[in-house]
View 1 (cartoon, rainbow, N blue to C red):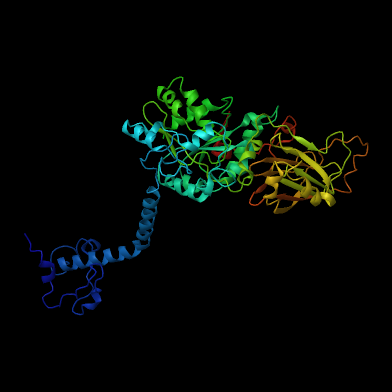
View 2 (cartoon, one colour; view 1 turned 180 degrees about the vertical axis):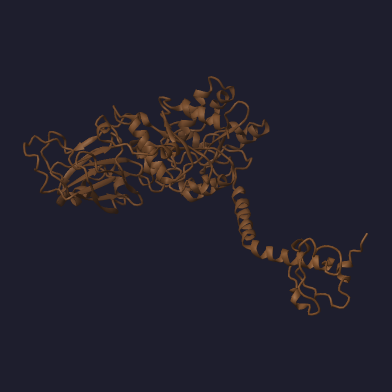
Length: 543
């Protein structure tokens, strides 16, 4: 066998290269004046690599390989640094993955016995007893017991709840809790409230969904006005989703109350098998388990310890693991993560039920069909939560409000609007529902000026969606006319409406394409013209 030192003995008349602390940092062959630069044997033609004085020595081959390795390392160094950065980010994210710590099955908060004014609190005696019998998964914390008895105990923003704000969980903290999902292979079931589509659709869902497939579940479709064509709604939702460029497999229109569409979601979840707050996630999971229980004994057993449902945003405080599938597989109920800009974050906890629609929405039109009143120069108040000043409109422009029936709409001249709000907030303009709450009310400090363009007079120009409340349909010619003069609008029609909208800070509003609700919508709604390839790539919707 050849000696391992032979490569260094092949140059008897040439000093060996200087040692380097880095094995990849070698002196270039040009530093050897007695010989030309060695060429790797693999790079030589067959004749040159053969036997004889022209053949490369072992030293030539060794140095050639070292030079090639050094060059490769220089090229790959940036990629290696990027891989190291990604591995470090992944380790940090996975460190936030839910641990095996016992949590309340109602809200997901870690169980604790130290602070009774914080989520997850359990009486020490109860905790010790359940722990001794390995039954901590069956424990409901004190906060969830209050919620289950109808108490309004907030968890994210807003007023009320436990003293000291210990129950508050910021949106960023909740986002951190879910960041590990981007590094997991999972099927994401994302729920969006159709009544508050923009406010409940998490804008940064890609931050933790990454490239994972998403089943988009649209909840509360049973609250849409009667005679709404779900074909129009399904197409409208898909069009909105396509613009967000997410990996959405399909869209399902559902109702957790009537169980509409739930079977389709179950079928797709089981087929794939590979889950924003107060949009009905826990209610959806309850409906899911109820439907699955007929054929799946594991789901039937999970019904006993299902997540708590309430009208309070932020009811779920941590991921809740649920054994839900026969033959393996787990379902996680996750907290809502985007609450700070919704109306529920600014009103008192006792007023929260007034924001939750309990029956089908019915549009309230201003002016009404039988009212000969122009909106220009008027201000419309939606409870004490929204004010719209109509600076410029057509004679037959109409605003239609879709939201909770308990919230009234008042119309006054814009010149009297400031004084009217000052005297009537907490009285006729509710919520806030009392003078005491009105005194601590910050008012409508968020102001946005809207100049709405429109091209067609026979369809709504847009919707103004108020986060956490509902939306307002803006119709350029919404009021029927008995006038024989069909050109009465021409002198006013320059294709623009001018509105000023006031909301509390930090409530957001969105100007979006009109949601096609009601019987008339099927007449004015226009489906997108798509090629066969575009149609194939778009997610399909189901009901």
